[in-house]
Image (cartoon, rainbow, N blue to C red; front, side):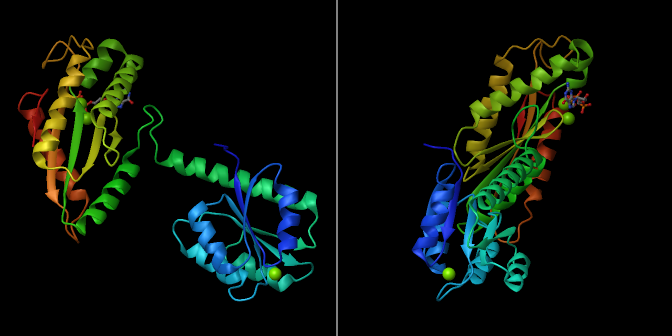
Length: 298
Ligand code: GH3
Ligand code: MG
Ligand code: MG
Ligand code: MG
């Protein structure tokens, strides 16, 4: 599959679509629509990287399309460039106020269209990259705490409709301060990466979500998972980390790196605070620490 950016060209006049396609097709995948309603259909199924949108169209005009695009969570981030008749300042202002990023004047000038489209595609790419970085942990590549809390909220809301179980696993590396003190921070970072990779191998269903919650703490969201199932997964994680046999001579739990794990399960219902899972799993984790570490409580 090609990884070229996709541009949706919307215009009620086919000759305009042909013109814009000819200007852009060397660099982008082009899809098109000849009416406002068709534009929304295509946009929702293709999720384009940019929309070139005609203002004047019979039926649903470009403004109405732009309004709907900006109101749709799936499409709101897609940059919209209006194509307006040359010199129509009012149309330009209205388009920009509706959330369009730019406009190109008709009749179009190919070099201008190419330059503006390229700039906005690039800015969109950078915005997406920043948004991704804001929810990703740089050391492990896992989601960070912000991403976990988003996932938890989303899953708890989704499962509330079917009153399904959701489990959360909180995990903390044992005596990790001593590990750093003995083997150094670089080795400590490597240990965190190994635990992250182990978690990824042990928690495998597509709906499951694994994150680095803090320094040497990890959290997993397991939708549609009973307490027994979550305990089995947690015990498997504990076994796998121990089986890595990463030496830890100053641990009081084992001669190797170990983890303590807390598990919390609850039936999702409307109005339940997603953070209550974190609190409950954290308090089980505390019990696991108090009971001697290298163990699972839930
Ligand atoms: P416990 O068994 O009770 O969890 O003891 P602990 O020593 O693991 O707990 P504590 O919370 O006192 O210490 C956690 C340590 O984790 C302190 C900190 O230096 C280390 N740490 C946190 N984030 C990182 C990191 O990104 N890299 C490294 N190398 N160490 C980290
Ligand atoms: Mg038109
Ligand atoms: Mg800790
Ligand atoms: Mg610790």
